[in-house]
Length: 470
Image 1 (cartoon, rainbow, N blue to C red):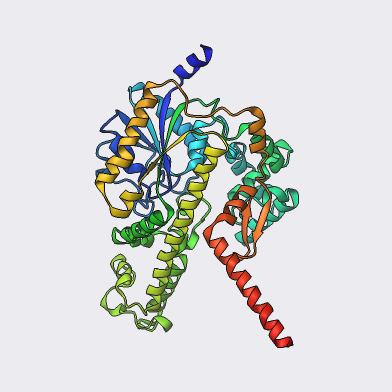
Image 2 (cartoon, helix red, strand yellow; image 1 turned 180 degrees about the vertical axis):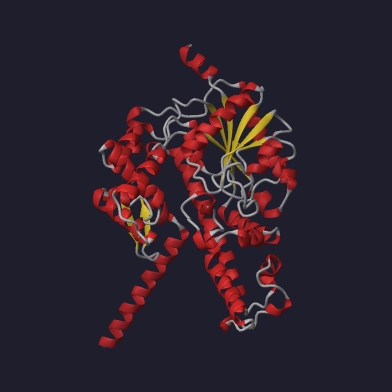
């Protein structure tokens, strides 16, 4: 009875998960015709103001009057951590429940969702050092360190310090991730314990567990087969270009971009850097010579319009295919597609881990047919209707949407290698962090094809050696 009463008083929250492009936002809006809901955005890039096309924010028209929260509300230069999301979303959930409506969390940033519904997030200890880190680092620069002219050199020194102090933790982050490097160093300064040791200990306490969650959650994952999803996200990037992506790229200041903070982390920002720098170089050359002599870009029709104008910038896609500046732009767009496909795979792996390692009871609805054939009928029948049934059952039930694992099973799961670094020679010395990521990588189609290619090459080389010796 005590356990039942505890479940009864837990606020009920619906969580819609899935890879980018699967249709999470569309499903959430459709649910509003069946339930009194309000939507809380859980996409780490859509929370920021600006770049609406690039981050694929739900337009005001597509929102269809359904209240959306944390959508384009955060300053793009700020860092909105998992802890920030948890604090903001928790307050919003209370307000929504007070209006007798159901909160629906929608987004592909699974760390945000985990931070909200789980009593502990792996990086909680780090997120809590944000304020301390900014204070301690500024004090360090003012009183102890001489001014460093080269910022990259300073970042490198920070990473080297961390690598000497805690090589295990250093292996978990990118050498250019200045924010995370500073957070790890601050964590050690404050606690006196190596970050890798502290976070391993926290992990053993129950990272990802839901049995002590503040909320009773219903998890729905909008899923689709990878080949279909890959093709769909590629088409979506092309539509984004048509809808004004280049106009947003034009407005980004690439001269002083910090790719590790805020909105600048979004896929579609860094990918255009080489193209933008080439474009700026051409414009500067035009200003100096006042003639359209742009080296390899001399074929640009610069005389027809002002090269500094946004309209001219957008028209580059209409240039001849052999134009080198257009080639750089096409290459940037292709990199956006490639990195989006990689994001899809990371998101799918993460959901699988939450399901298998931590017992999250995730209900999968299949949007493959809808994405493949653009069928509204299959969307209603295969995605919306099953989701409505799941949510109705959830709202009428007292059972939580998680599986309580025995303690010994949790220990086995949490003892999995999360910190070792693996290097895949077959894939160009790609670095994988943690045994789970390494195992997932080895099962990937691309890795298997490269390994097979290397094996065939080795056989051919050995045959050549034999022939030469003969």
